[in-house]
Length: 213
Image 1 (cartoon, rainbow, N blue to C red):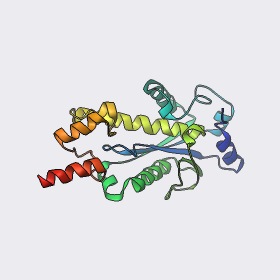
Image 2 (image 1 turned 90 degrees about the vertical axis):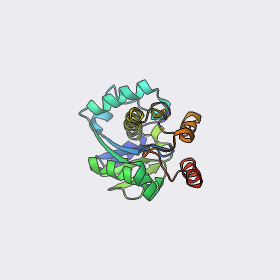
Image 3 (image 1 turned 135 degrees about the vertical axis):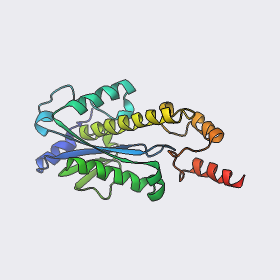
Image 4 (image 1 turned 180 degrees about the vertical axis):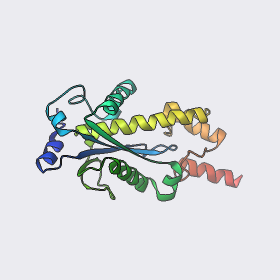
């Protein structure tokens, strides 16, 4: 088992007490926003190993929906946790591209919690308001990034459930905007909604076909 506090300990030892873990959800879907979260733990609380947070968090994708919801609630209610969220909608994703939109969402999330240093899942991110370290598969290696992955994932999933109520023919509450067979069939039958990413290939191809008809 990896030490999920290894990167946090290194940052704390360097004097960075306001250390944020940053992660995103929703880079790949054909519809809906990209959502990023930044989470700062009180280092004294985490060093003490207090439950129910320390030692149980992991990559949100490895959790069931029920477990993600449970930990989302724990994190939201804890006085030892600071949370920031950044959301970029589909229209802006189309304007600036998904990579820039993801980085912007991460920067917005970080700005909300004003960190001194950040641990970021994946590759380096431009535009953050502080120094940062990128960690490939960091959502399974850093407790701060794991927490951020849960906040981002649950926040986005709830948005997609709301969109499902607005556009009931697409199944957003089930596939969360990803390009499943059901989603693609709904797109072909009903066309794109304002929440779809027109710059993403299946949607762009559909729009082009509509123009030709």
